[in-house]
Length: 165
Length: 165
DNA sequence: TTATACTTTCAATATTATTTGGAAGTTCAA
DNA sequence: TTGAACTTCCAAATAATATTGAAAGTATAA
Image (cartoon, rainbow over the protein chains, first blue to last red):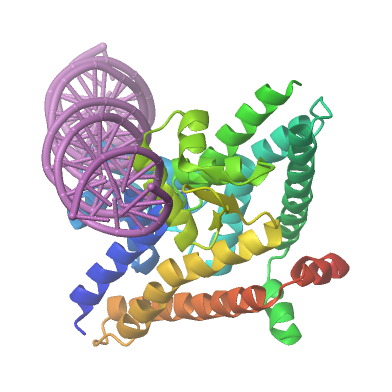
């Protein structure tokens, strides 16, 4: 396969994957682009390569920085800002896990804590309590796993799982 | 908190969570509803409870069955079809993991295999190969973990991780 | 301080995803 | 075979989300 074709496909694929992972398509594409770049890119570079507007690039770069997946780089002698991506896939996955925990798991835990103590002793209310308590337990376990994962800075996680097989 | 209020909040929350997990909002809400129901529900029941159209209920019930998260139940003497949800959260998470692996990870693995063998020896092409090979390695590790998880029918996974802490 | 080179914001617009509701299809008891 | 009681399909409508582009903002060199 030709390089340009491969690169194109890779960026498309990463965009699609991103959108099913809570990261919007363009954001994921910009990240993909920065991942394979040999040097930091400017907003201009990204606009050209992905054929998107300046505003869009700016918004998504900020989102990437927010998620801890990209950084500004200042190049001396250049007025422009440049950007580079975190390239270590383990770090990326830890960052994404952290963000998603904060955005999704934490609010759910809070809610489940509240509602699993619902009033009432009808069959319906009892079933409700049972289900929400199960969910709460699972959510807490998930939280522990994610905390563990976030703390590890090696590929510790996979190494151990590998040995268990 | 009152039961009806708690139930409402729970269904809303599950819907929101679902949509960031590749499950559309209504599909997740129907699942949430079935989870806390004491008996199987008909399409009609779901329409009323969630205030959505028949077509929508039908489509999403089929999707839930497709994902292995709900089942038809035939009640003797009743013409209508009834539905119940898988209620065991471990089984649910395994099912979701399986489906997402199939829909997302498998295509990515296929693509990465192809493109990490891209032609060319320029700095750019080399960086590209390096990045895509890293991604491929990570994707394969993820696949192993998911396979392991899917095979286990106990909460095996969490037990072991618990001990490692 | 001013002109310039850049970045950021945001209302308007375009795109994508979801939902509706009616029409067509299916099943079954009589 | 009919028709009642359902289920399924799908084109059109609606809602949610992402993108654009122009205007406003900011920093820098001279």
